[in-house]
Length: 228
Image (tube, rainbow, N blue to C red; front, side, top):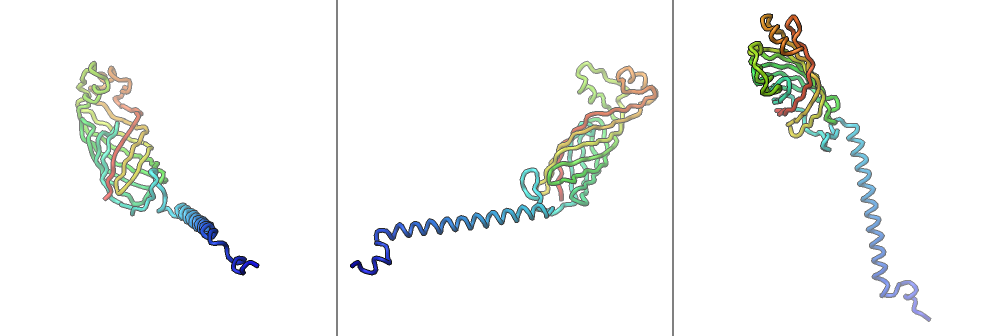
């Protein structure tokens, strides 16, 4: 008759394999539990991000966790409004108003405007602004586009104009610094002195018989805003 202990206990040679099987089962159970906990946490985080506007994800994949900064300085370069330095005020995450001054390379000018970003976490924004450039010699600007065959005009030595921009584009903010690039259309208008109308009408069909100039032009702009 076999001893009783052999019916209740495995042979010593088989005990290490049994311990390995139990270890594998515990490891798999622990891994499954951690996976379930991780998936539950991720689902809760996604739900919180969708319900909490402060947890929106920006175009670079980072959440908007920074506090809203209201005041800033903006520098930008545009095809119609030249180089501008402006003071920016942001009363809410989706609205900015700004005003400043700059130069088109021939004369100083001023500009006022507003930018809307209703989907800030998507990086989409619209802006509408307008301004005025004071009289200056814009022959250099015209010659840059027309080439060496351009002849200077005395009528353009004291030329001023008004402008209005409507643009849409992309922007991204990180750590209080915002970069933006936009494109759209600009409406430019001016009034030529009566004594210069005949000379300019021979140069450009944009000049009306009464001396008024009105034109829609493509408008692009890039710039930076540093929020304080």
